[in-house]
Length: 348
Image 1 (tube, rainbow, N blue to C red):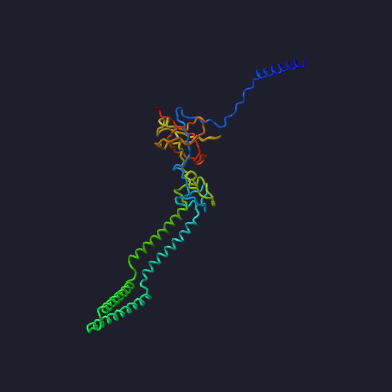
Image 2: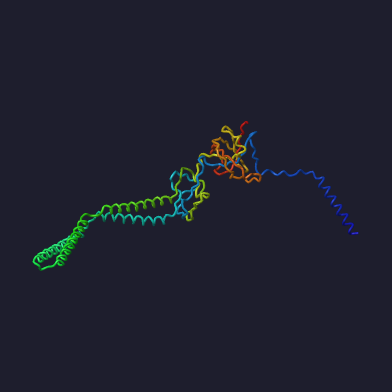
């Protein structure tokens, strides 16, 4: 009996539920859009993804070497002039090499000074004394040779003694000639080719100093042009990266902005230099931007800036179309910001 009562009550509950759902007339809740829809204002137009950039393109400043950062001299938002120092890398290693190079310059200069100081007055007397001694020995050997020759005429000497006296006289004459040559060489001073070699070595040492000075200056990274520091990814005490994809600083001109739109290669034929265009920022409060076409860059490239749309093709090739932004001091747009660009299509 209880089982049948339970079955009947279940059927009655199910019927009441079906009746309640079928007779409910409350309208479904309409959820608000997360953001206003971005609608093409032109009846016939081309939509493209655009990126805000400085009119002269932004410049990524990369360290020339992977070295310790000694000082960072600029802040975000600071205006810099061309060649103004931005940051400095550690120079101690090059400074040590420069000290050695300058010492080598001094050594090379000393060699040249020593050449010009020749002959030393202290070196002359010993050579003069050596020449006098050699001449005295020569006179003695000549006298011995004369006596020997006279003795031979009287039959008191043989040919062997005469030959020995002649050889001794010739050796003494050679020694005297060598002593005189040494004295003449000393009096003549330095040899000119030696001076040229010393001067070449001095020039080489000075070139090494100049090269190290240039390398030292290279470790002070300077602004390649006038602009504003848009981004800073470098701090004192860390090692600077030489990866151009991760620049230490980004510079750009905030006074003149442009929008670079990526137009699909299939739609580029609809865009002409006279086409009108507008841009619209994304977000809860979109801002419409007046655009003026500057140029169509005549080179198609693979699309790299993706929107994240599931239907987006990654094999698409695009042509860059650059627009000038009608600058408004209160316009809240920034370089690197993505905007929707709508271009009026040309009549076919």
